[in-house]
Image 1 (cartoon, rainbow, N blue to C red):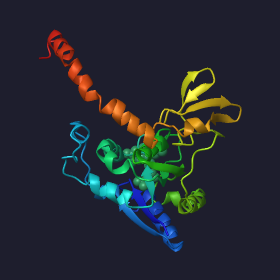
Image 2 (image 1 turned 45 degrees about the vertical axis):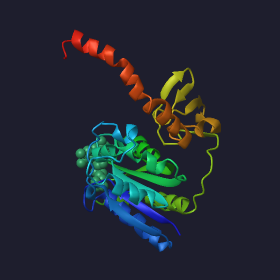
Image 3 (image 1 turned 30 degrees about the horizontal axis):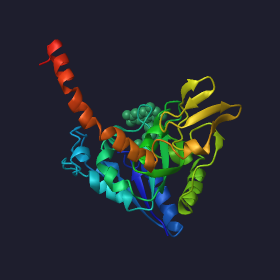
Image 4 (image 1 turned 30 degrees about the vertical axis):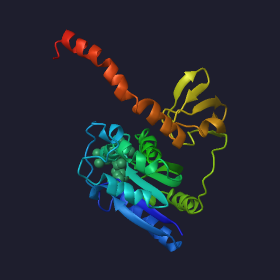
Length: 274
Ligand SMILES: Cc1cc2nc3c(=O)[nH]c(=O)nc-3n(C[C@H](O)[C@H](O)[C@H](O)COP(=O)(O)O)c2cc1C
């Protein structure tokens, strides 16, 4: 039996994400599993102050809010379903405010076994959502989760999403969540990145692109993009790469800044900023 957390990132009561949350909650329980709906609006989340104490002093964040309460709810579950409306091509700001605090959460998540997550974005039926799934999935990857499915369902007014045929796809995704077993990525040709479902790519050279979210190379072939297993299994958000990023960049920025301070001070004087 799985215990699944459903996180709703819309503030709209009886809105599309709310209804999808109730739809998934019902399905999960009917299949003999446990689930809990939580609403981002019920958590007070303050903006990161950039003090870096969580990193350099290895202390808990001093901001008095619900950062850890929300992390606990996610970490204690076996899987997460994230539901978010599209706001101006991407996720609502509060989700990003939470994501900005992920360095505080890193010590809590870095040694956890990989758990599965599903992200469902709700957009209006127009072409205004290119950054939605990538941002939702950055949130999930930063929490150390494996995105096993990710897509947009369409609906504008409250309840309109229930008319979308993709609802059937949600049931299939939940079955995937129930049966999830950690496994490495395999090589694949796909129109989107298998790690984060991003379909916006950076061009590196002629036919070679890369996913901007996870930096996995994507070679353009006739049927789409070829992603090699060895690259997919070493993407930016893997536990090893995250540890490397933490040790070799974030932790070293303190010493680097100390070294640069005299030069910065000279520039401040030159520009009349002191
Ligand atoms: C502030 C705001 C910005 C929005 N921006 C977009 C957008 O860029 N693209 C889009 O497809 N829909 C956009 N929408 C529409 C919502 O994504 C859509 O109505 C969705 O169903 C809302 O989900 P909810 O009912 O769960 O809140 C926007 C809605 C609001 C309120």
